Image 1 (tube, rainbow, N blue to C red):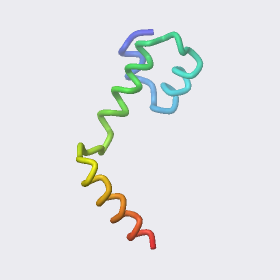
Image 2: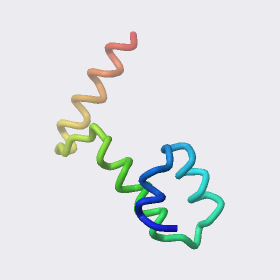
Image 3: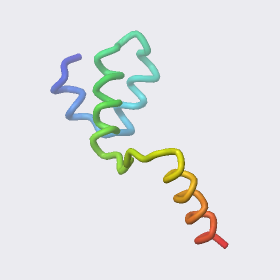
Image 4: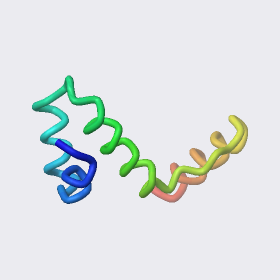
Length: 61
């Protein structure tokens, strides 16, 4: 498959393809790149992470 074909797949279809074809590294990297592009991860220190975790726990209570 080509990169254009991976880009045409939905996230669900691409993940299924990656699971069925673990030897296809290009497909795996296309999936990881896609997920990273849509990630809302923010770099932070350990202290900031602990504060954020506590804030989220308090919100759930």
